Image (cartoon, rainbow, N blue to C red; front, side, top):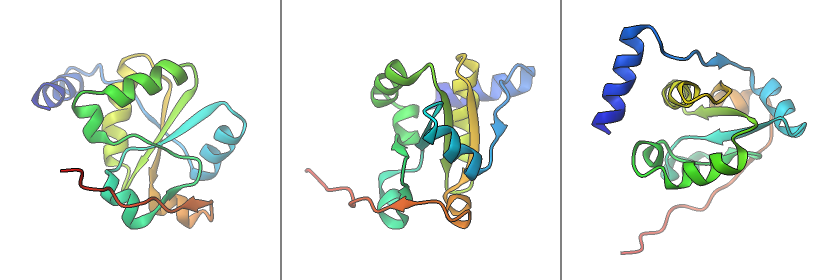
Length: 134
């Protein structure tokens, strides 16, 4: 986590941070429907369960991106040729992850927050709460 934070700070302070274009939820939904993009919800599992998620969203938590990136690596290996559209609660975490993905050469856009998806009247789905497997 500290390494990613330091890298992010370096990228912004050096002026070489990759830009993450904003995109409206409706435009994002159309790109996903056309098979040109994938939509990723970077919030955490408890947030997914609490509010639901965008119907076409792939659920890849920012905590996995900050940690082992196991799920992210698998996903990007299969979908890295498509545009990656991210959203979270407010758009901030999506912007952080997006900037790091863009710096790796991925085409990325930020669809803002889940509330923006809902306000646009786009379909959502429920997610089961995480289970404690201890």
